[in-house]
Image 1 (tube, rainbow, N blue to C red):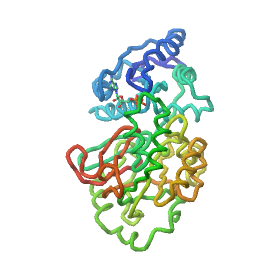
Image 2 (image 1 turned 180 degrees about the vertical axis):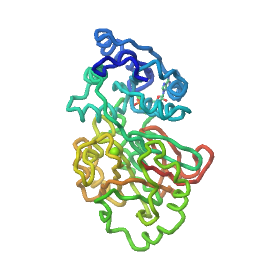
Image 3 (image 1 turned 90 degrees about the vertical axis):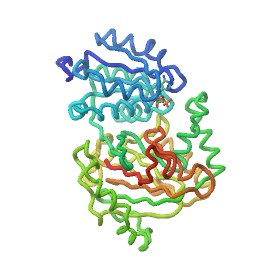
Image 4 (image 1 turned 120 degrees about the horizontal axis):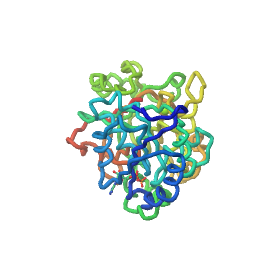
Length: 381
Ligand code: ADP
Ligand code: MG
């Protein structure tokens, strides 16, 4: 693979996927006007493929001839990238396929990955800079998180959300025409008509974060011996199986929280979208204090349990610069693994709430997913 890179590591042959449906449906035009001329000038050849339906990109990534390309570029939002990743990891030669370079030209509603990568390279976020980074062959390694629910395994590179952020991701789909504004407007609606979801959240703190949520009650901790982490430790062979780096957490490493939640949000990279710096600490590896935001080996976890609408609004207004994490309604820590068991809604919303993976719906509430499994959702980096 990557047989065609030049001697400076620049790609010569790319497989380019365009999602004509993403964002404001401008991806084709963005490619023709702002990307193609630079690729041609740089002597990069490419195969162009428009996606025709949901999951098309996943199928293409699963069946494509990977030896023919130096990289796959998505002209899209984060959703298409997620499909490509899952397609590559569903291949029998996934170990090989994982080495494939992935690139993204921001052309969707949510472009958290493009923003995170450009931010890390100290570049401003725009289509041209994303194109130049691809042409120059700039690469970073990236953690892949594995989500296991019953028999289903998914892979994620960006985020997992439950509660208000998931409701906004999923339910605002119908306001697609508004572009990025749809998130802001629908967030306001959801803050005004605030919902809470019942559930259980278990997590394994990263080194240095073991005592960070000391308000967890003794009874809650005692629940550790209950079935949730147990069940998933049994399925542990799947945990992080693709990243190869994660060992199965011991039972004693788990912390557990019960009750009503407004938000549970896991981030693998700093930016959830191009304007939401959800996890500013995704920049720093705990203990070593090194900056490796895209592959620190941990997930950043944000939790809101109880708060007033006013406090929530104040906190959400700070999402653009990351200072929301300092607000007292928000718990923010780094974790190695998480297990989430939605238990029902308190006041509105679908039973159990949505779970959104990299901005796409992964589950509609407890028991409504795919095989009807009621298994908790587990997420490990
Ligand atoms: P956005 O950020 O606007 O959501 P994405 O690139 O993330 O844009 O894509 C959103 C979804 O569009 C993806 O889940 C993908 O499966 C789907 N999709 C891709 N091609 C098409 C198509 N031709 N028609 C409808 N949906 C599509
Ligand atoms: Mg990370």
